[in-house]
Image (cartoon, rainbow, N blue to C red; front, side, top):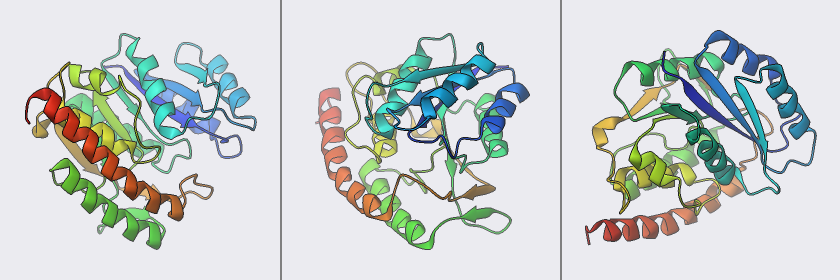
Length: 254
């Protein structure tokens, strides 16, 4: 069974953190390891994460960032920590478990059983699924996804679902070397870096990316990403586009 290290970014999550669910995740799969990242929380999040790591010291690690740097940097720091371990699979998901544990397990099994380098949960509304999203957030998300597809030059339905898995590749390691430009649209940035590559490593072939439609997903009350912030992230796409252009130029594509 291939081990997988999953990063969980946390900022002021003391009231929403489901300790039992996280313990069930690691107890149910001996190959799953968690890296819980406290992003400079102002509540009891840090102590909650430390208690979890003490409950399963070989399977759960807790790290605390000195100050709040945003979800993007919390995820990046967690993944950099994970890369120091002898693990081949990595990922991250939201602390509110908007993507439920059974869906995370399904995504893990998908990347284990395929040669995909990237497996992404996709909140595709369809018969037979239970995808509960705020209507405004949903339609703003569809506009954002369309813009992201144009920027990435690939057809992708959902870049912003908080559950993603990756295989250790030179492209993945290189993609994490620099801080992300965007606090919330970093998923697009990361996918772009993996697709484009750079001087240090070539990009991944499009066939190594896989979107998996989720059966269940729900908006959880207390999300840090508000509708107003969602509209601001659209401006980040311009900066991301310029950065990807630079990376293509560095790679020699002009």
